[in-house]
Every structure is written in C-alpha cells, then in structure tokens.
Image (cartoon, rainbow, N blue to C red; front, side, top):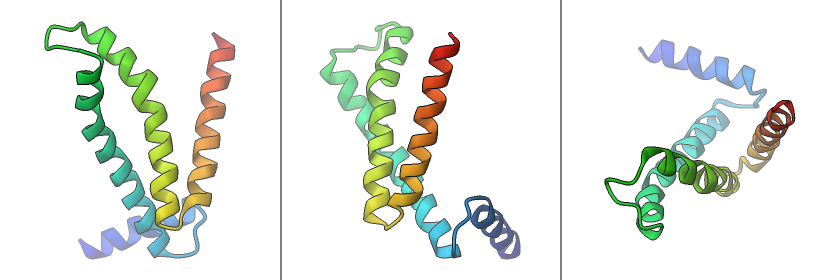
Length: 107
C-alpha cells in the first residue's frame, strides 16, 4: 500500500511539475484545509442568510455558488501562502477563473 501511495504522489508531482514530494503533500493539505473550511462556513452563511430546513434547495445552491465558491478560491490562496505553495495556487486560481469566464462567453 505504501508503494502505491508513493507512486501516486510521484504521478502528482510530475503532473503538477513540482520539485519534491513534500510539495505534493503540502498542496494536498491546502486542498484539504480549504475544503474543510468551506464545509464549516456553509452553516454560518446559511444561518446569516436566514435559510431554514424548508428553504428551497435551488436558493441554497445559488447562495453556495455565489458566496462559498469565491471563498474557497481565497482560502486556497491563503492556505497556499501559509504552506509556501502560493505560486502553485495562484496559477490554479487563474486557470479556474479563465475557464469560468470562457464558459460565460459561450453562453
């Protein structure tokens, strides 16, 4: 199992064009911290917006996308900076923003 983990980390290192396996681990930690933070922020946001259990799911989904998606991007940059991987995440956020913008133009 450890051998497979090492192979997986090496594939990610090559795919992301990183210098070391430690960078891969730091980046995976950043994704984990940012994702967990958004999960913790969602109930606070929904409470602040006054959402209840009977609030339509479409309204909740729209609020999630409008508020928490940008928050996730900022959290990636913040945690990336804290763990010394800000350059990697700046590039990822730029790519994601470009993809969203080009999708809007197609519509």
